[in-house]
Amino acid sequence: MLRAIRKFYQFFVDKPFEIGAILNDRYEILRVIGTGSYGIVYLCKELITNENRVVKQLRPSKCRNKKEVEMFEKEISLLRKLDHKKIPMLYEAFSSNGQLFYAMSFVEGDNLEELIFSKKITFSEKEALLVLADLLEFIDYLHKKDIYHQDLRIPNVLLKNRELYLIDLGLAKSPNRQKDLLDMKQQDYYDLGEILLYLLYTTYSSNNKKALPWTEELSLEKETVHLLKRLLEIEDPYSSTREISIDLETALKAMEKHINLE
Ligand SMILES: Nc1ncnc2c1ncn2[C@@H]1O[C@H](COP(=O)(O)OP(=O)(O)OP(=O)(O)O)[C@@H](O)[C@H]1O
Image 1 (tube, helix red, strand yellow):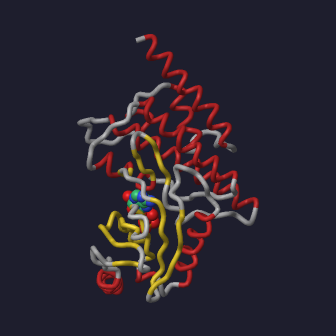
Image 2 (tube, rainbow, N blue to C red):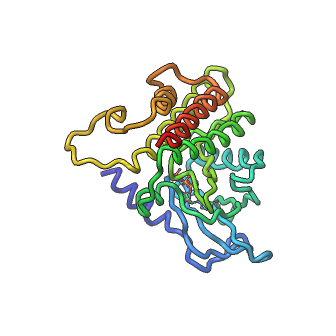
Image 3 (spheres, rainbow, N blue to C red):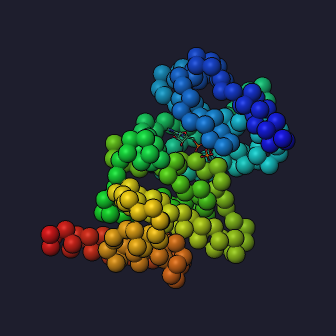
């Protein structure tokens, strides 16, 4: 019952702003492009330059929760530390009528979840490995800055003109203790493994009623299986991005060999 009331409350309180509304005297809302668990994401026209920008608003229902507000502020402070052409750039953070927002660059593309489930795009084994190579580059960049993403999932990866972009540092952390650092690193590696598995399943179809383990359902090169098993911690987990990239290169080479033999 309490849950139902909370949902009802959120439905009204979290209503997005109307199209045409102007935020911070500067951003005219063109449309809502995403509603996540804690943010409402708008595509806006920035009125000084006429450029498209994305404005993310902390859901109003979360604004009274100190922890959620701190997390939103943390997301902004982490974005401020970044300068990567494939991670949206932070323009400014602002508040208006007790609501919190930040403006960032717009990546004109779809996220991998939409592409896979709505547009039904598929990834061959080689394409999936190449996606992993790009994601690994993001993770390496973030980890070197002592930032651990912690929310690597297909809706947080955007594809624009065949290039991948990483978004949503809402759960990202910079650890204080060595033990946390190891756990956070492992979490990001594990999430990379899950994304890879998702992509590999895009070409899978079967009439089997009973689901089998991925090792039986997918027919992959042994090097790819090895990489996946280590990412998913079924075998000796990775301890650095360097180790992953060595195994990834080996898996890509195995693919090349296979293609040349065909
Ligand atoms: N800079 C951007 N450019 C283009 N689209 C974006 C951008 N930022 C976010 N989006 C879109 O908005 C969606 C939601 O954004 P985001 O993941 O940041 O919100 P969230 O509330 O943190 O979501 P979640 O609950 O999934 O963590 C994304 O999946 C993406 O489609």
